[in-house]
Amino acid sequence: MTNTTPIKMPSRGYYTLSKVDAEGFPRTEGCPSNTVDNVVTYEGAYYTLFASRMFDTLYAELGTSTTERVRTDSTLGSPVSGRSGGGSGGGRAGKEVDNLDGTSTITITRQMAFNLGDKVGTFSEVGVYSLAGGGTFIAGQLIKDEFGAPTTVTVLADEQLIVTYTLEWTVPNKSVEVGSGSVTDAASNSYSYEIWAQPYFRDYSINASSIDTRYNFDGSVTVFYNASGTRITAAVPGVYSTPTRSNGTVTVEGLFGTISPTDASFTDAVFVGMQARNTTSLAGSIVDTDSALIVSTANVAIAAVVKFLNPISKTSSESFRLQISLTMNI
Image (cartoon, rainbow, N blue to C red):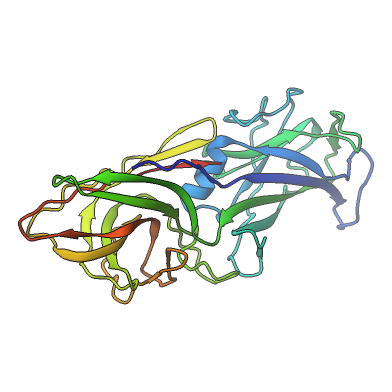
């Protein structure tokens, strides 16, 4: 089964620059103070969204290139060695806004200050990375004036440059139908189904303290629920393929082994949860039958739910196999 509508998780970023002298007083000469939009790279979006690193510390770097940054870039055009430290994203609470359309926007602003005299010269580009050395190029762009034209910032030996970076991600906070179709079993019984993508965070409550996501894809189990949304089987182990990505499209293929006759049997399965993490405690997990939403609990990380419009059954003499593919646009 494959979803027909990609799950959209867009991101954007912007930054400002400022300078202060040794006493902390502002120095405005040679420093554009306007806000500049930049690109969040494809690898930067993947790193933050699917490696659960959205709230990690980032590091700013300067460069001297005059070439626009694009989403396929892996570094600044001409980076100058040495990055500013710090820039933690902190927690999730207070940074999330419900867009009232089934998505939330997470906004994190990080301030990264180079030490006094650490960067001296004229610079034309700025970006942020995941590590103090090496790592993933998250976002960056040329320095621009208020009219959008490329410009530079000049930093003297008695000045300190401060980079203030804001990154935004929009992620699902509710379940959403992304596909439908039908399958036929060995006895020629036909079953229509819908595929429902789940919220990005395990706990989808707005501004919850938990930052655990349902979209890690570092393991999997399959869980069956009846028409009332109650779990009717133990979790059956499975595995996701390593996510493949190309120019902003991330695809994860569920490679779920066959459920043997002795693994599970059921007579009225309506919802099948595809678990993104092989957690050990699913006790109490239930499905909201109207929205096919797996309710928030600390140990449930189900990324997708298949809803059968007529219940399926499996006896102790039958095998069962379910495979699903998810596509995300980032």
